[in-house]
Length: 246
Image (cartoon, rainbow, N blue to C red):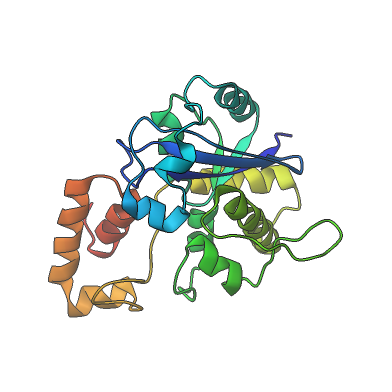
C-alpha cells in the first residue's frame, strides 16, 4: 500500500499562478524534512507577516526548482499519497515549480464532507486542531511546542488532524480496510466541497441555505465575483448548488 506524505508549504503570497515556494516541509515514515528556498519573486509583506520568513532569511538559499530536494520530493510523490490541508493550494505551488502530484488527500475537504450538519464554524488547520482537540505528540507522549504557520509545525498539526479524520471516517464507514478508506478519501478530495456555513463577511456564522432565502442577491453577486476570479472551485460549486444553477 502507498505511504502518506504529510506536506505543507510557505509561499511568497496566495496567488495560485504567480507566487512561489520559500519553505517546504514533509513527513514520511516518521521522518521530517524541511528546508527554506530563495523564490524567483520577492516574498510579500503580507506573507512575511504570517510566516515570519523574510527575503533576508532566504537570500542565500538555493532555488527550489532543479534542486535535489525537488527531485527527491517528486520521486516520493510519484510513488505515494500527498496529504495536505487545502491541498489545491499546495499542489498549485508545487506545480508552479515544475512538480506533479498524481495522488493526494485534502483534509480541508474531508473535514467539510464529514461535517454534514455544519457544526464546525471554521475549517482552517489551526481551528480544527483545537476543535478536534488533537495535539501533535512525540513518541514518548510529551506534547510538542508547535509553531503555527511554519511549514514543519503545520505538518505536525496536519498529521494529527488526518489521524483524527481517518478514525472518524472509519467509524462511519462500512469497511475496516484502510485501503478502501484511503481510496474514498482521495475520491472526495478530487471533487469540489460543499461549504455549508459562512465564516466571514456580512453573513458570518449563517448557513448558506438560509442566506439564499434572506439575501439571494448577495449570493448571486458573490458567485459572479468568484467566477471572475476563477480560483475557488469550492465556493463556485457551493453557490451554484444552493442557487440551483446547473
